[in-house]
Image 1: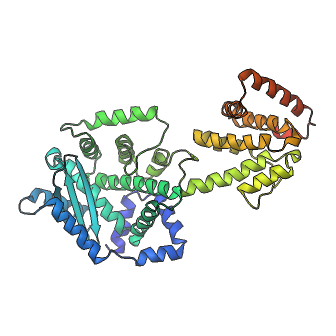
Image 2 (image 1 turned 90 degrees about the vertical axis):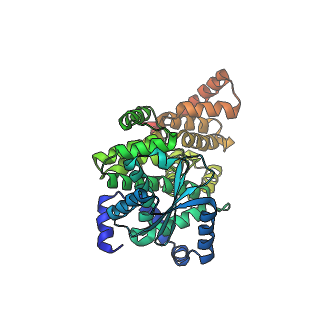
Image 3 (image 1 turned 180 degrees about the horizontal axis):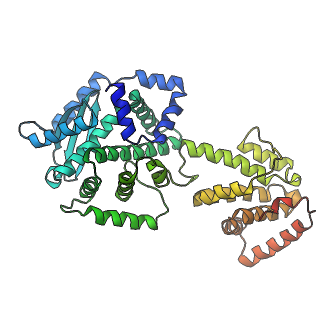
Length: 413
């Protein structure tokens, strides 16, 4: 693929910023990047893959499956690919599926189940275009996305790796499937055939009404706040929604679909970028907790330093609205994490008696996590509702004795 062709394709297909950010992240780690760039698939690995294909599939020849290869040739022409495509039908498989293995300029596409009987020509075109979208993805950006994918998958599959690499790899793959769906859309020049293909593959149905399922997908998303939970492919309704958006405009597809793929920041499922964002916010959150000078005791500052070794309070005015927005946009798991941070500071320094508890309760109220925090306080302090109310009232009396200047942190609308 020459540079002019690549540029033309990139203009017509949505290449997601998420892929570029991960690529740039690993390119900045030059030793890792260079090692994977230089590492090639060994000849014995290629031989093993081809041997496995021959042993477990029936290879489809052009003479017997002329219509299939005709579709493939048209897809390659449309996507400006020079792939050498070989088709196989998997043996002893009843699950409808399709997969591709890429070896340099060879594309080995394996059908499973009854797909070749299930799909009409337009839907088969959509399927092959999707699979060859994986081939195209490896070739654009001078092959750098292929290197990036090998790095992130290697890290995700290493049991010693940080869990953020597993989550990053998952989202990388989800965006990749949407890119390949976009290839299907470009080749078919409409989204209904692509949607029908998706639903047929996932359900095995012989007849599918694309508009009906599109309406169903929109109905799901009207009441759906969670992002994709799948490991390798976004849910069919998410892919259908993305295709509908793509049919309207490709320019803002990532902006529209991002909440459904990336999701809210959840401390239990962070990717590389969310980890950095949550770390930065945690620093800001600690500063906010320790803004009153009376809270900056040796015990409290030592605990803050356990989060960040060079922690200090800048004394700059905190943007409470930005803190509230971050929390509002975060997942429940992150709310609980922040509540437990507050809980730590509520009881670290016994010399302050009940003041830190009242302080953290006021912060929770100010930031909109009052209910979650009070529930956690009752649980961890092992208090009944009545006991908690009595303790809270006593703590607030102590807090009200502070000067107006000392209480200024709470004076926000």
